[in-house]
View 1 (cartoon, rainbow, N blue to C red):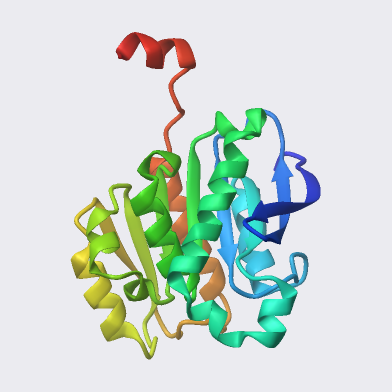
View 2: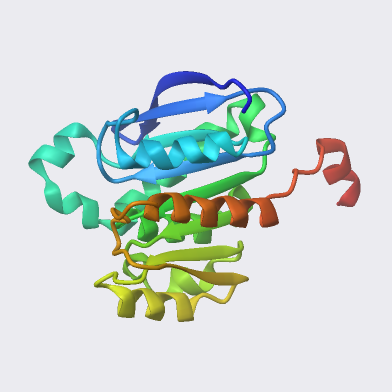
Length: 226
């Protein structure tokens, strides 16, 4: 495993700042953005464990919050505001465009919970930003029919066998018109709390990114292609 440099960041998203943690090293094969609706806990949460698995697979990562601490404490309904959360992923995309070492990398996106709906909306609006999407359970159906049908990047839905919202996940999956795959994790629900379940989900994400993330063409090559 290569040594990654970790940095704490704040990313502007309209009137608020989103907390983020970046892990990067030269010569990584890609950057995985991991959106979480929980705030903070970038080092000791289950999301952090998932991110560490991505790092061990050789990827740079950017784990970022979709909500502020104030919103989490005072406005709990904000986590269900898919349009707002989608705009915040868009703000992360905009930040990424201005980070030369990162902007040149192929980018994958992982989201869970209501963040899955936000991710769908974001990649539908800016398809050039993401090479592959993983929805780890969550509620992608909250994105709406239009955004689901507009997603163009390869998308894998990772679902716990006993997820209580499995019917809604299947309905959202059926609306996707992109290259897609359903990855079931046996014996667990949408929180992947059972021993080995979160690692299984991480393996499913890593496999998907290894299949679909491709190096971006050099600017000269892109210009010549036009």
